[in-house]
Image 1 (cartoon, rainbow, N blue to C red):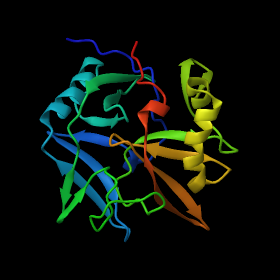
Image 2: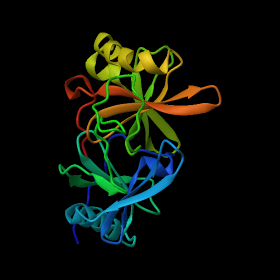
Image 3: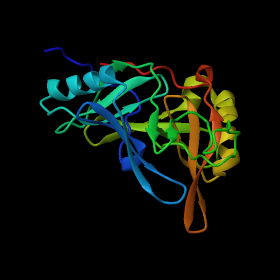
Image 4: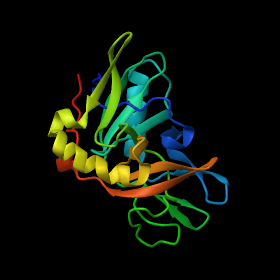
Amino acid sequence: MPEYPRFAGNCPRSVSKDAKYSVKQNKIGMIYETPDDEIWRATTEEHPELVALVNAVKVAHGNGPMGSFYINEYRQVIVPVIGSSHYYLAGVYDRPLRFEFEGKTLSGEPIGWDGSPLSPGDEWTGPHPGIPYVLAAGGSDIYYSFSPRPNVEKRVKLSKVIGPPAAAEVAAKIRDHKGYSGGRFYVNEFRSIFAPIQEGYDWRYVYIGELDLTKWFPMPEST
């Protein structure tokens, strides 16, 4: 049985059910909340290779097939397994995921509910699967956290990777929508950036723009 490497990059933790994909039998599934508060459980059978990638990792680590997974901005397929705090790299998957549901096409592409392209600041009506990052308080840096060993948390800062001026330039695009208090935002496999914004007691998601990988964290390695 093949062995799969540990994923050494940003591993999503404590995200909601609609922020991940899952394998269900021979299908890829996701949860989508519509603008009028319906919950859609959309699936597609068009990606048997992706199903096989995810299931192979689950089984190799003693789990049954099926379950949650993520695809990051480098299109790496990241798979958590039950009984371990580690995530594993299943491979790279380049085919775009699109779900047909009641006449609508759902995908992480920056396209509005009416089919028109989104501009920064528009409402994000797309699905929520993505990799969470954090805009630091003050709005001049971006980071993610991971646990390199038990009882230790390490922050990986964009400013340490591309330098403070370049990181501040990237962070400013997020800050324009999130504000100086910072907070979580998401990047998906289409490199769309979107973020939850609080308005009173309610939350809404906005589209921030397309990620430039030349001014970002490098492609994560595996161990």
